[in-house]
Amino acid sequence: MAIRLARQSGNDYVPELEAVTVDEFSTLFENPPRATAFRTNEIIANKFRFLAAVHSAEVFYIFARLDPYEQAELMQRQNRAPTTLSAGAGAGNGAASGQGVGQTTATRPRRAAPK
Image (tube, rainbow, N blue to C red; front, side):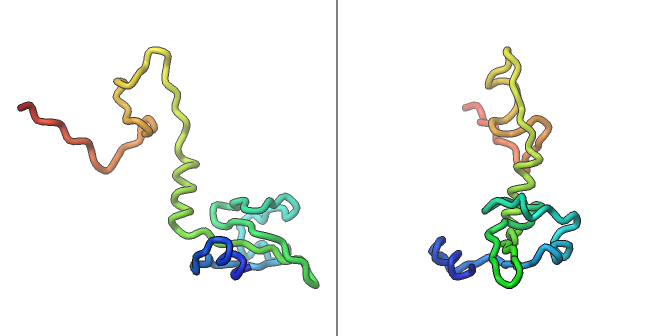
């Protein structure tokens, strides 16, 4: 699996891989999911990406652990609630473009000084 990932991406970076049986799901997940529902590249518990099931003497489920940047991006997308503008609201409604209501930024835009 590691070699296949490296070939597909053309990158020698390979994520941390976990191969577990259904009986071992509790070592990875607080609330173990149902194995029959997994789809390839599905994100599970915001920590793992399901890669494949390998049939050997037992069925092993292979997961790639998400790196901290992927986890943070995923959580940020989930926390971002879609905002809708009312019919009379336009660009001058006071909210920054692409910024949800109530979200703040670390920096604020500079004002242009009058000349």
